[in-house]
Length: 183
Image (tube, rainbow, N blue to C red):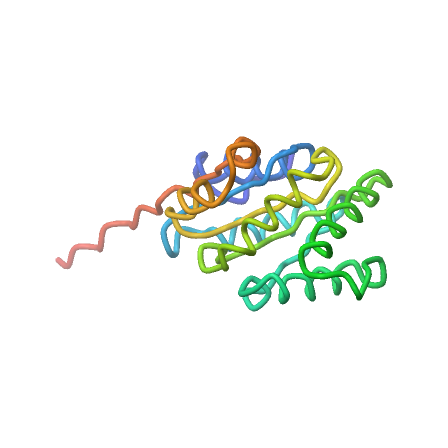
């Protein structure tokens, strides 16, 4: 058995939950936590441990600013498989259809969006609607990571049918060790 990445059980549990849901789930995943809680580190460890069976795609923060920027980045990820003439909305939906075909071929896709709490509301809504419209058991799993407020923001932006398709994984707060006493 592989030794745990995290020495405490709650952080290891969060990582194991992400591993399982990225590979077999049919929900968008939301990783939340305070700044410095280790969200980016958990995503990095997820990539390290699962890249042999899952295809991870990091969406840069610059691609989360507008639907057009997101569409450009998804075209880059899918290479020549997406129509260059399609508008942003259609491109995002096309990306999830492309990812379904990849999943059917045994290569599940995972779309990682770190600092998603800073993303445009239109971008979040478009990703969620395209994911919900797809065959979620085969399509790319969207993973949003951000502050504790991200869950509330996502749920307020999403329709009821979309919010039922989200799973929240919270990173536990890191307790700092007490400072050593001077003698």
